[in-house]
Image (cartoon, rainbow, N blue to C red; front, side, top):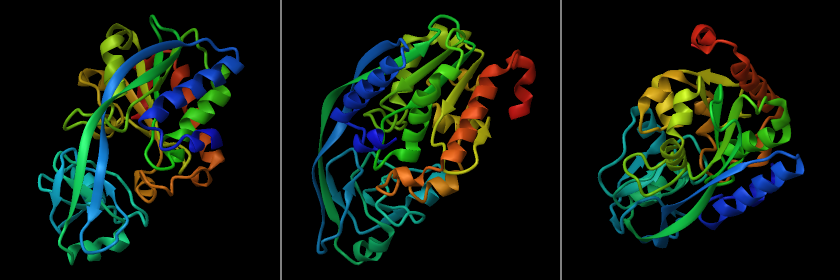
Length: 311
């Protein structure tokens, strides 16, 4: 966990550094793997400024330009499944730090909740962004032909990235030999957090795998998103809206056989995509419980009959 944290934020050049770390850990355990490579365009920010005040901030817009002294709460936007169409400031009312919970097509700047009044009373701000292509590697372990279960675990991150999603990566690397890899496929995927695709800019690595291994996903009996575990007792979801966030495939038919294993999203928003997502935020007991749930999902003999237990 600490080594993954030291690689955070796991974006840009650190995507490939993290992939190398994952491969090294698998090799130490004598576990073979298969690599799928690609390239993704990511925003590179040249300027992020709040006028009038020296307010700590982070750029979260996909276009350069000025930002008006208007602010939206990303926690409330997330609940309503909305993205602002006007250039504005953003903040997460649940998190005391700067939380880059949402990116926008138009210019936007994210500040902490304590600085919202300052930007409301100021004269705005400005960002400048360009785009650059970065390589990435997805690391696949197990059955590449006809897996019973395919488990997606994204390894990139904003902020500290310990709950989201270092804990899932770490416990899987630690205990991967407990999974029957002759029957199942584990996908360490990136990038998940960011890309140039719009409006669903997250999940790029998942869609990349979907393109490359469509037949494999079609033959899988269950597809699992193992994401943001260790913050609460494990939550198992088959809710379609949750799965659209966790596994944003192009073909939504895959979601009919998907399961999400995650934590309480209300609690997650208290540290979401911020520097508060540190290793100390992960409860190892909760993470271990989530691992047992994952093994239970993968051990179901007849998914078509037994999946009701997770509904």
